[in-house]
Structure formats: C-alpha cells, structure tokens
Image 1 (cartoon, rainbow, N blue to C red):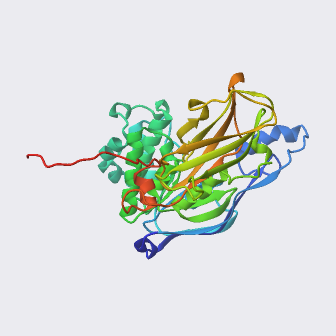
Image 2: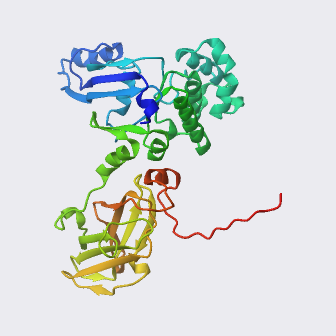
Image 3: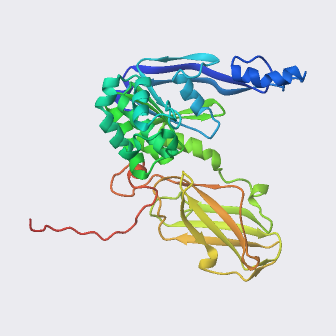
Length: 420
C-alpha cells in the first residue's frame, strides 16, 4: 500500500462478520414461495427434511481506505460473493457489522438490475437510476456507456432477454462504471467479454482508484488481480486467512494446490507402473535456482513392474496453472528396458533456466512408452526461483508484472540514428 493510500481515511470497515445459512426443509419460512412449496409436505403429514447450518462467512475483519483497490481471492465456495453482498447491503450479516462511508455501486451478477423484457436502452436508464444516478445524468452519458460496452447500437431497442450473457454483463458494467461511486464492488466481471473489453474494464477500475474512489475486485484471473490490486485478501472456507501484498496473497492462494517435496514413501507419488522416489531441483552445484543460470533437474524413479522403454516428462506451470514448457526425456535419450524393482535416474541439465524469480510448479509424468502408458503423479512439485539479477536493476515484482514469467537470456540488439 502506498504512503498516500495509507494516510487516506477508512471508507469501509468490517468487524467480525459472519453469515450463516440454514440448509434443509425444516423451520418456518419468511418467503411465500418457500411456504407454498412446503404446504404439500405438511398436508401429507411428512416430517420436514433435517436442517444443517453452514457458515458462508465467519469472523472476518478488515479495513479498506479511500483510493485502495483491494483484491478478494479464494477458491469457489470460499465466501467471496457472500462478503460482497453483505457489504452492498443485499444480505444481512448473522454476526458482526460493516461500516461504509460513501455511495456504493455494485456489479455482482450478470445483468444486475436488468429486466429481460425491457430494451437495452430502457435498462440503461433503469440500471443507472437504481444505482443512484439521475435520469438526466444517465441520458447525458448514454453515448459513453454504449460506446464503452461495445454493444452494437442496433441492439439497443431489442429486449435484453435476447442478449448473450456477455452482452448483458458488458452493458451492466458500463452503467456501473459510469456511475462513479465512492466504492465500486465488482465480482468476476472479467469472466466474460473479449480481450479489448477486459482491458477497458481494468483501465476503468484503475482510473477509479486514481481519482480517489475505492474498488473491491473479486476474480479468479490472477493476472488481472496482480495488474490491478496492490493488496489482496484471501478467503478460505468463509474465513479471511491472509491480507497483504497481492503477489504474496496469490502465492498463498495458489500454494494450496502445490506442495513442497514430500517423503519418498508418499503413496501420492506412485502410478500403476512406477514410483517417483526423489528429485533434485537446483543449480549443478546444489545452490538455489536463479534466473538465467544453469539448472539441473534430477528425478529417481523405481519400476514397480518390468518397463519397456520407460521415460519421464515434466511440465512447468506458472502460478496461475498455465503450461509454460515441457521436457520429455525420450526426446533426447531412450532406455530400452528396466526390470521391476530397479531404479533409474533421469537428469535434465539446462544451460540457462528461462524463468523470472518466483514460485512455479512441476507436473511430473511417468511413462511406459512400450505400453503407451503415461500417468501424472498425483502431487505437484513446488519449484522456487530465487531473486537474482536478470535485467539491469529491475526488482522481481516489476519483472513479473511487466515481463511475464519467461526470461530471455540473449538478444542481439542495435540502435542507430536515422535521417528525419
């Protein structure tokens, strides 16, 4: 968090927030639809289904300052959307409270506030008024909203029930983005729309923060969270487990899918024909991995049965789970046969490790080529590339944001003056 943001006033404070839902058919209902659905069961004398309490949120406390763009990340079912609905006053908390200073604009679902029978033009007016704008303000910005959404003007007089979900979301976000609230709440808006629209969304949210407004941003797109948010919170099973710099928050979240090297006897490291016994991931002298330095990746595999032309492949994944590159031993060398019970060591020597500092993961595949069998071990191996000089004096965080995960070792460059 920058010094200017740190000194800014607090505009949102959540204190020991909790939200409990009751699952099942027991108890009385405050909704007419639910009461009518339960009427046949009562008339037939059938017992109500057993109930179970589930906490979607539990004991969540945090503050957000003016001008801050806070990422909210976590797995599905972690409570992210519930938290936003409590903040937006759509859902009442079971425990705790939220204090909000300023006008809140929220975009929590596709086509929020849109009526399917109304046209796009009518829904822009309705949505703007529902979000706090006057009719005059909406009409004054109608052209900007339509242009930003990218929805063809020919569709504006068509009921939105004929729109795709992407068109509805783009139009709804365009309305919310031009509301200019003090606090903008956005839930997975980047899940739809093309690359150009997503870029406009990120730019708009960045502009909102620079102008002193606050943004709460939920997304499973870690690249977007990294680009937009200086700080993030991690939710897991309804509880806030971390708050801090976004890069560390992403590692905390994604690190749950990766594991540090496990004991050789771990049954998760075996497939039907082979077992991964141990591995070495380091520079040839055993020192930590560094960008653009030599690297040695060694794997010892035990044959659980006679293997014909066994091999091993590893795939290197980014923190977001994106495949960066693979190396297959059989592309460079070949073993004809390994008897059951014997062990073989596979070694990959790389002249230069083409990675920016950070956390990565390896998916290891054990192969029995003669039987056309390839199986991934059921664990991911964590790989850490330590901070080290890459390009001049750029810090690692800047490199990951602007350069991506791949490091280019050698490039022939030149420059010269040319006539004007």
